[in-house]
Length: 315
Image 1 (cartoon, rainbow, N blue to C red):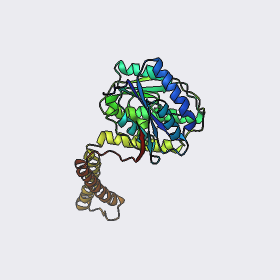
Image 2: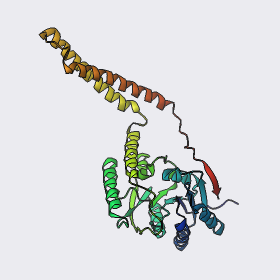
Image 3: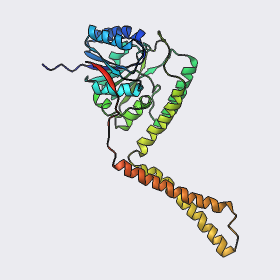
């Protein structure tokens, strides 16, 4: 007999959060049962070295709605989300962090917004319970991302998000791309992106697993996402434009120097402008060829799933 599709699939990346998982499972159960939401919860153990997998196994044995996937090693949050989305079977997917700072009581409200027609609903931690340095860095990150993306969200990096299931099936996540899911969703053609103010709680156990280097990696991934969106399918448009601009600028300089030499008789052999013109021609030709080669590679590229070594699955 086929198993009924759950209302909600929860995707929960885990990295050394053993102390919080039991309480989190209880809160998820209470929130969904109270709202009469059927659910499945996928804990994705991202190579934890503490007892996280033992707790996940115990929760699975106690309640089959809690399921688990254990990575052989640490791959990062984007990888955990990608694998979790592939296993999700619900009508709506919801993600939240497992450190108890995201409140599971927000799940029904976010699911309701998806049912009202949104493709993606992102949480907004209006009163963030973190140190001032972390809040300042997050505020700067959100301002920059908002300007570059043109999406008017206040909190791109909130782990609490809800999606229509067909939306998550279009996402290709790797690196630090989980920070830019709203951009990826918009660029996939989904326009109904909403935001919901959510409660944010102080961290109860342990400490954050992310250092200041994540902002550097995050910025680099923002550049990557922006470039791939605009030129990923047509790299020649980017490299070709730069190359031709540089090449013809160099040609123009060289022609002007040639006329200056032939018509006015001025020496040009020791003029820096001659070197600049030659450099622009060479750089322009090389950049154009780079675009041509990138175009050839892009034409022959096939989408392949990123291989993540899964050690164990609890269904």
